[in-house]
Length: 120
Image: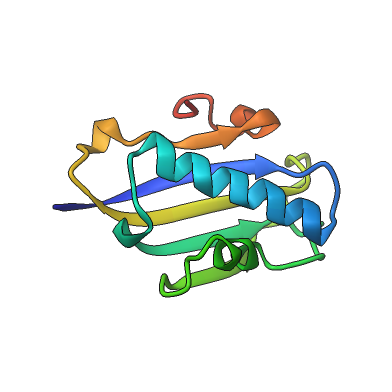
């Protein structure tokens, strides 16, 4: 069993806690499904949010999905001129049999423009 990192991102339409929860839950669900992962396969998840998001912690959505015993942490992205606004990113560490080339990174909606090289 190997340890692999899975990247992902989603852009929010607005800075509201309920909306953030919906979009982050959607992102995490897609990451798990596309990589055939169960919650037991998760080691930890780093969440980052752009500086314009203040309504909630992205990790709170993961807790609502049932990730009660997975270590989670939130941080703020760098404020870079011209960067895409209202974006939540994840870096999930997992145990999986997938080779590195088989990992599917998930960039939903407009966030796909952030990493056209790896967005699926």
